[in-house]
Amino acid sequence: MGCCPPRQLLFWGGIKLIKDILEPSIDQESKPFWDGLKNEQLLIQYCDDCHNYIFYPRSICPHCFSEKIRWRNSQGAGKIYSYTVVHQAFGPFKQEVPFVVGIVELDEGVRMMTRIIGKREDIAIDKRVSVVFEKVDGPIVLPYFRLV
Image (cartoon, rainbow, N blue to C red):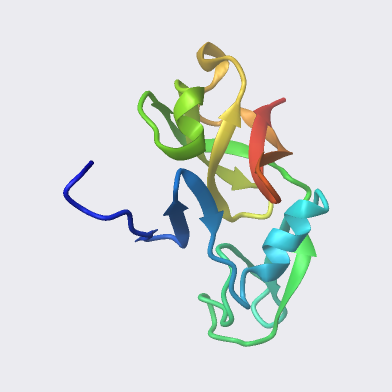
């Protein structure tokens, strides 16, 4: 038995680790994003004033500070901006190492951190990818990207 009682940990970025289960912290700004994933839609925000796409979800446009933001369905296509190979992981992902995590730049212009699926030797900066919806634990669906 350890010296410390089990406790809930909150990590930056809105992810909670509770007994090896990752759960997103769903708030008012991000709920449409998570609901969209359950319906196999990649929704991102769009500002009607400055005409920029926005990711991560928020209530005010970071480009012009407008509150005129709405959700749009992304085409789910983009390119690899950066990536790394994960050799050590925790939670439900620890059995899946090694795997690739990267930043994908969507055709709409926003970047998101995600899993990249494909042969590791084929993964490279600027390679084209498209979204796939991966049910990872219970009702949680995450957007992963596959090489095209």
